[in-house]
Length: 72
Image (cartoon, rainbow, N blue to C red; front, side, top):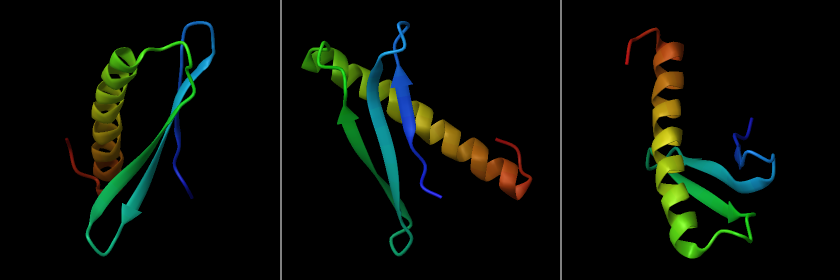
């Protein structure tokens, strides 16, 4: 199952799509970022991506923790 995170604004317009790719040999993840918000300037898009990255990392940790039965 391929995960995909979509971020919408308050008007339900798609802003960005984040697609994680796991490299099991290196035990690392890469992310593809798609800018769907033509109205955001580069500074605001970059800031949005930083916050999104934090969310994705926390989400992955919480998911892994719930699967293993541990606490975060």
